[in-house]
Every structure is written in structure tokens, then in C-alpha cells.
Image (cartoon, rainbow, N blue to C red; front, side, top):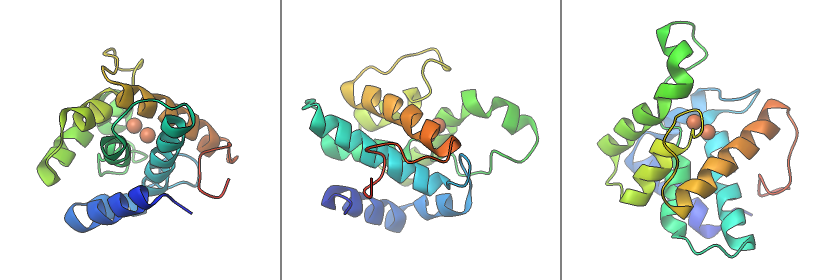
Length: 154
Ligand SMILES: [Fe+2]
Ligand SMILES: [Fe+2]
């Protein structure tokens, strides 16, 4: 079972914004960007709770769900593909700002999640959690293995 908070946030972001678009774009291996974002949000929440980290759960989950809200297929060859790793956090932030009223924590999560590829590190606990959870989930998705704590079924 996903947490109630996660379910509520997915529902809200799909209804009020373009989160559903992420269902048609692939991220790593056979995982869609939507699935990846849910994995990252779930894993972030697990990390926060298991390690008893003081953090804002709502902002953590919202930011994690929106961290890859760039809304294009990055596998298509072209300029965008070569710059994707560096540029997509800013594009995700612009898109998310268009659709939602973001707080500073959510903005930091989205903008800084690719550290250290992008040079500026996260500046709040929530953004550090998502930055780590994103890499952990990406590893499991790329290798097509289910790492502990990445999905509600594991
Ligand atoms: Fe990303
Ligand atoms: Fe990601």
C-alpha cells in the first residue's frame, strides 16, 4: 500500500497539472517517468520516516513527484538529449511553476536534484533526501532490479 499522503498528492497533481503526461514518457529501462517519480517520492518518504529525519512530508512528496516534470521524451536524438542531464531540472521547475504554487522547499528539490552533475548542492533536508533517493531509484530501474524500499511492494 502506498501511503495516504502519496496517493493524495499523486491524485492532486494529476488533476491540477500535467503529471499524467509523465505516464507516456520513458525514464530508465522500462520505467516511465511517472513510475520513476512515484518510486522517488515513496523512497524519499521511507528514508525520512525510517531515519527519523525532521522534514516537511508534504513538500518532500510534492517536490519528489515533480522533480522530473520536464514533460518531453529525452530519448529522442537532438540538442535537448545531449544537454538533458544538465538542463532538465530548470525545465522541470519552469513547468511546475506554471501549473502549481510551489514553496521554497519544493523549488529547491526540483532545481537541485541533479547535484553533483549540476554544481549547486541542495540547501534543505528535503532536497538532499530526494537527491539521494533519485540516484538510488535510478540505479534499480537501470539494472531492472527492485531495490529494497523503492516501491510499496518491496
Ligand atoms: Fe532528473
Ligand atoms: Fe529522477
